[in-house]
Image (cartoon, rainbow, N blue to C red; front, side, top):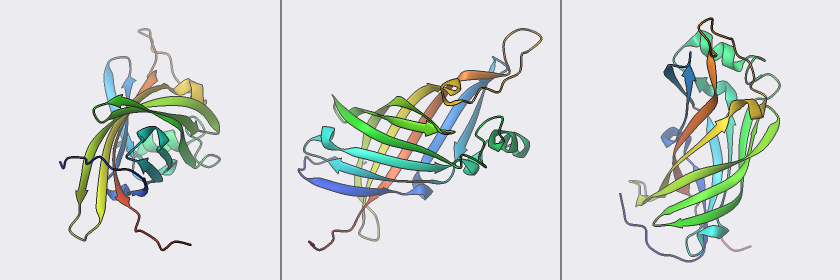
Amino acid sequence: MSTVETKTGRSTWTIDASHTLVEFAVKHMMIATVKGRFGDVTGTIVLDEGAIENSSVEAEIDVASIDTRNADRDAHLRSADFFDVENHPKMTFKSRRVEPQGAGRFRVVGDLTIRGTTREVVLDVEDQGRGKDPWGGERAAFSATTEIDRTDFGLTWNAALETGGVLVSDRVRISLEVEAVKAQDQAAS
């Protein structure tokens, strides 16, 4: 991991889907944790290294790219019972503000839209550093976590267990490992 230099000015970074992980974890039957991920993510990060609060992020996830390592479960999650991919193929996040927390940490507050419903969420983010790739490009990495209530987004399907409780927890933990590539400098217009 390289040391982040203090810089001024804004730069634009494109999320590298092949080096980015969007993962979720939810309790199953009140006892086990089931994890899944989304493989198709795109987005842009505008970084202001001199004033991180002036930074922003926008991301889009193809919901059909869900993978829980179980084809039947993935098909159910794509159905109208859950994400309703046919009518809501994309999940989006757009930041409203960035709040510095000190020492390479910050909170990104923004709007998460799932299944046509938008709610404010807070991502706890850690800057993982910068580095040059073998092809001369600049890369940046960030880790982030948050937790949501899936029912806030219309994901309400569930089944009661005869022993008490429910099949799928409402609480969902989300973890992100994001790598982004700095956009090439363009000539002034």
